[in-house]
Amino acid sequence: MNKTLTYCFEQEMVPKVLAGTAQNGLAVIDTEGNEDAVRNAVERGQLVYGYLNAGALESERSYYGTFKHLKLARYDGWDGEYWIDVTDKEWQDHLVTEAQKIKATGAIGLYLDNTDIYYMCAEGFKEEHSRMIKKAPSAPLVYKALESVILQISDLGLVVMPNGGDTFVRKFISAHPGVIKTVNQEGVLYQDKKRQSKEDTEYYTEYLDWCRERGIYIRGIEYPRTKEQALLCEAYYTEHQWQGLYISFHKDLRGD
Image (cartoon, rainbow, N blue to C red; front, side, top):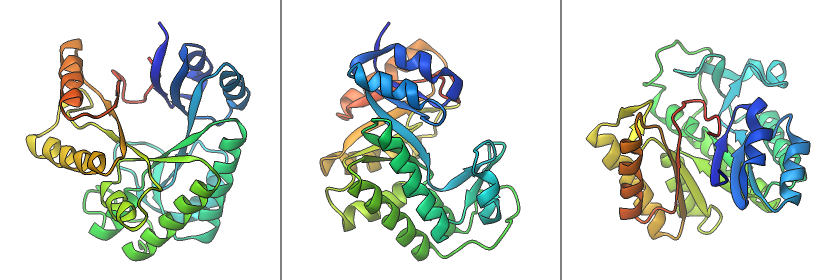
């Protein structure tokens, strides 16, 4: 069945997912290694957002060795991923270069992941269970770095869709109204097949409603365990007038 909204960050599954995405549907995918498949999908009339990890470094990426000296701490819950020092100029240039590569495939936007690095530096990595690898930069410097990257990517003509990162996103939207036109949030109701706490749901709901009131298009990913829970998510999103919902029964977003 063709889908109008699909997320797939498993690189080997991307070609199949693109083939199953409806014409004029949106596929949010990892474009690395799938450039030809993306170009073909765009020619068929599909819309594509590429994946770009702004605040963390993944060990399987081809450029891991170039930037591993910038690792700040292990990313809790994701093996082989590390929070990174985004204040480094070479890392910022790298992000803009990667955005240019993604645009060259015909993608119209970016799913910008892990701008939460701003929150982590502001709060002192209190949620991390591992020791720091190196001293974290100050939150104001992290904000300026991410701000610069997003403005440069936006100037390329790409739609920038931050995933999470509400603390940073609120600050950026207030300073640059109209630049960020859409946001994505994972797990307002269900994360890892578990119901979120009432406090977490209320927190994310207030954030997304705040964005919606400013004309921001809302997309979200929910990770329920059952179809009944998925229906509850649909009803909740409809109630709050959030426009895009993707249901995933897999943490790693396989596009099914």
